[in-house]
Image 1 (cartoon, one colour):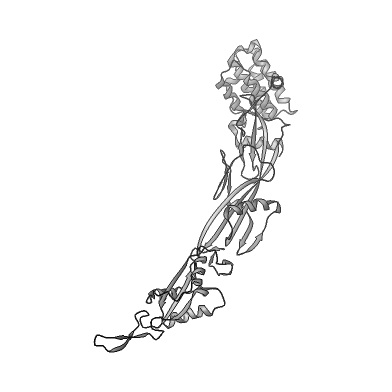
Image 2 (cartoon, rainbow, N blue to C red):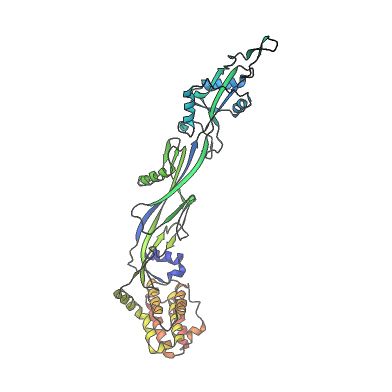
Length: 442
């Protein structure tokens, strides 16, 4: 970052403040590289459900198929769940072992399920919100009804004392009891982000990280999701990497924020430079720290970053006074006690300075300091003149600007205008036109 480029960016981003800022060509500009990392993860949680019911041929075949499957978790047809829910409920759980119950409890919350081996539903490379159910093989079973021993009937003595066979009330005459234990994966989305400097942090610089990017407090700077590069994708235990190894410590930090055991993890990042510099405020004669963010991307400017200023010593002030003497001396002559002539002189000098479309930093510095030293002018009048330094041409001049009250003031102004126009070794055509017009009015 050159001083010239820095000055041009400040001119673009803070036009109003630019005229009150002086940046020396020898200013120290320091570069800091910041990294923004966004984590977008999907976690899968599990809650088990169990249905115990008297089953018929279709539901019995389905459960036996699950039991015979090689996989621990078997994708479940929703139709089977509905069949089991509609079947007569079997309430006697005396045949369940404590071990089976314990396994089910461990599955709740996803502490036991290995989702890497489950065929989860996907949409656009993300987990679908609606997921299929999965039967837990080790907790599905087909039993004989304990009440009728699977015969579907039990003996009962009627009111006449006759023993007869009747439909088993426990299994509604089906004889076979099915146990279906299953879970439905619940997908949750989570994001986390952070910003870190790949070196020394800038004092006083604060970022606000958000779900869709980040901003620097007090500026319009915004990191948009569309600017980010993919850093890493983690799907079911497999990492697809695409980033500099120097960023690994920051990746680990943001991973800690989103937690472990995520089914899918997407990490994105953006590197952007920040430049600190010092400048002088003409109004207060204080030195401040400024910050230019991402000048070639989405630039933002922060002035007075540290919130305080360092007042110039008398020796430094004297140095600036000597710089301004070239123009400032005109305000100390007896002839320029006429305030209106003084304003005309400064407007014409500013017109020469902006005539070529660019106000040089030295020109701006000298003219600003000269205007600040003109006690004849009010603060508002000084501000109006300094504001003209931001003009793109000399079209703000009026006929009155060439009609001086005192001929001596006009001649002194003409000399200063010629000196200013020749200071860059080339007189611009517009500069020459303004000078010639003043000559004709004398």
